[in-house]
Each structure stands twice: as C-alpha cells, then as structure tokens.
Length: 550
Image (cartoon, rainbow, N blue to C red; front, side, top):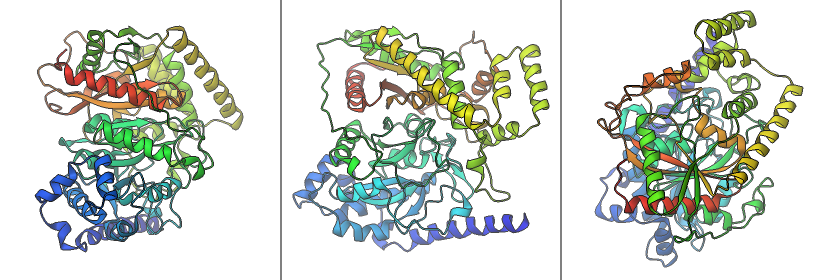
C-alpha cells in the first residue's frame, strides 16, 4: 500500500510539472496579451474561419496562436487543461487540410479522446506516462476535415461525476464563480469554451456529461443518440459497458457553431471511420414559423423539484413558445422512478468495481461516487437495517429503495435489465406518439452550478439528464438566463419530499449563485439530432425577441 501511495504522489507531481513545462516552453507569442488581431479572429464563427482559411485570407497558424493565448488565460482562471498540445499543433496547423469543412479550426478535446503520442489518463495516476499509440476515430476524422486538435481538458476521476476534479490535474472551477463547479464529466471543455479559449470541443456523455457543463457554464451542447458519432479508440473508465451507451458529442460557444460542426462531422461520413456509426447522412430540417408545434414539459420528475432559478428558466421558454402560438402541455411520461432504477442498475451493475480498479492507494474519489461505493460495500445486513429505518422511521421510500438496490448484479440479472430497458423505451415511444409531441422540454438539472464538493448530495439527482441516456434520445442545451438573488429566492412553502431532494436544496443558495448561467434541455426522439438543433434555433430566436422575465 505504501508503494502504491508513493507511486500515486510521484505520478501526480510529474504530470503537473510536465503540464506546466509545456506551457512555459511555448513560444513567447503565446504568453503575450491578446491583441486586437487576436480578438478579431476569436470573434469569427467556425464558418467564417474556414472560409477565410480556404480563401487564404487567414493562416491556420495565426488562428492557433489566437486560441492558444486565450486558452492559457482560461486555464489560469479555471484550471481547465490537461494535455497542452499547442507545440505539436503548430506542425499540424501547417499541414492541415485547407479545403476541408473544418479547415484550420482549432478543436479542443475531452481528456479521454485519444491523440497519438499523448496521454489519456482521465485523472487516474496509474495511466499517466502511457501515451496512446493511435488517434481515436473522431480525432482521425477531425484531422481529415482540416481541424487542428490543440488541447485536452479536465475530467473527474471515474468520469462519473458532475464535478471535474482529480489528484492528477486538480479541480476545474466555473468561469462565473471560483466557488462553484464547471460541471462534468466534460467540465474542462465547458470552462474552456465559456472563457473563449476554444470555440468548439468534443466530449462524451453517459449521464449528462456534455449537457451539465453546458447548463452550468452558459454554452451550447447536444447529446447525440448512440451510433451517430465516432466513439472507437477513446480511453474510458467503463470499457464494455453498453447498457447505457457512451456517446461522443460536441459543445460550442454559439448555436451556429454547434450546428456547423455537427453537420461537418456527419458530412465527413463518420461510418467510414468507425464501424459502430450508422450511415445516416445529414438531413436539413427547417421548422416553419407559421406551423405551431406541440411541446411537452416535465416540470417535476417527482424526485427533486427544480430550484426556483431553474424553474424560472423553463417557464421563460414555455411563455415564449405560447406567445408565438405553439402548444405547450405538461407531459405525462411513463414512471420516471422506474426508468431511473433501470438505468442506475445498468450503469453501476458492478457497483463501481471497473471504475475503481485503476485507483492507487490514497487516490481521491469524487464525494458522490465515493459515498455511493462506500454504501455499496457495507454488509447486506447493515443496508437492510438502514433501509428499514429510512422506510418506516424517516418515511423516505426513495432512499430506502436506493439502499436495497446498491449491490452488484449477475449476468442473468443484467440481461433482464436490458430487456426491461427495451420495454421502458417502448412505453416512452408510445406515450410520445399518443400525446403527439414534437419536442420535450426539461431542466438539465434541478440546480444551477453547485459548490465544490456538492456531488456528495447531488450524485443521485441526475435524472433529468440521465433519463435521455437510458432512452437514447437526442437532447440539446441552450442558455436562457442567469440566477437572480431576488427573483430566485427559495419558495417559503417548499416541502421536501425525500432525502435526495433535501440534500439538493441544502446546496441551493440564490445569493451565492447570483449570476450563474441557467440552461434548458430540448429533447427529441432517437436519432433526431438535426430536428433538435432546429428546435434549439427556434427557441433561441424566440428568446432573443422576448423579454426574459417570468
């Protein structure tokens, strides 16, 4: 154990030193202030950068310098970077495909994306100093499209958290508040993009991992359905886990950039890079402003009521849609608690054995997953007594149920859960069709960005995002407004229904959260990414034309 602990400490120190040396060794131009020419380049959309590079009006090397400068400022502010590949990216910029759909565009990557010659340790100290031997499929596609990978960004250990913190790289903070998290597990991307250090990034999502950073950092993202985006070759904490498919998906500063990037990737025919991708070409979808659509809303999942701030953001969108003549209804879905139960057992069927296997002695775990694994490791008789106490003394059926289900399952039980998942998906499909929905709206999470360490209370309150991983639906995030300490004070008549909800509301403080971003989630059915992007554009257009009060 001592040797394991010492190896952990040495690896963390070595990796942090390496990161700083790579920053310090960059050419002096990267350490200069952001100049007016840089500001001009940073203001260009992806489409404008690509057009300028193709027309030879802009050199990819100059684009890289501008984004490199801003990224270093973002890192100084939020500690968002892991692998600083800028020196190598200078060579890649010289040889990039200047006729491709992403010609000369710097692209940042979540740490798990494999880049040949660079680590993808995802916060495990045991995985440092082990550079990847090949580019992952998405990186090969991006290079062929003319993009320039230049940075990798921070994640939580295990990738199963809405906070991005680990012993190897430290904690990434929210660009709007150093006391709050940026989200996770693609949190480093969220912070970097919100600070302007990247215009587009690629992350992954198995329970909200690109959507929560977008919600909490005030940017845009879309979670694709499985088999729409390349995933092969990435480093992961859950290899072989297919009950809840991991999907790679983009995050962006603007909706225009998000759509442009998604279209560019699909038009590169990702199925020729990754055997798992379905050969579905890009489909242009334009929603008529004259044809009313039907929008369902889940106001409350029955587990955790959205906070006043998040509830207000959702109502702003509902009001804007109704004023524009659209139909907005409360959606009555199949049992959400049933879905959460199926999904959590599928994702954590081994009770964390796989995600904790690489850990060394003394390696820090996120407080949410750490607490969950601690409970899972208790003797069954203790959990039974605790569950009895929560059910009959505290009258908390939710927590009692979680305690009873916190165990590893057999292969036969896992297969049965997959069958239950498919039946649950059928129920959702039927309910969606029966109610004639075009889109569904929810909060991405009940809270704005939580304080550091808040996952201790928030780990079991991920349902608003996780549900659509279970269903494999397309889901996008757009920023709507910001927390207001006056408008978003806690309701005086709030009655907490269970221990999970009580824990979440311990974290909610409209005063300390004042100014934090608030997003909403726009959901379509499986493989409806283009439709969801069109819905996002419609809602954003209405919000721009409507005073944001509710």
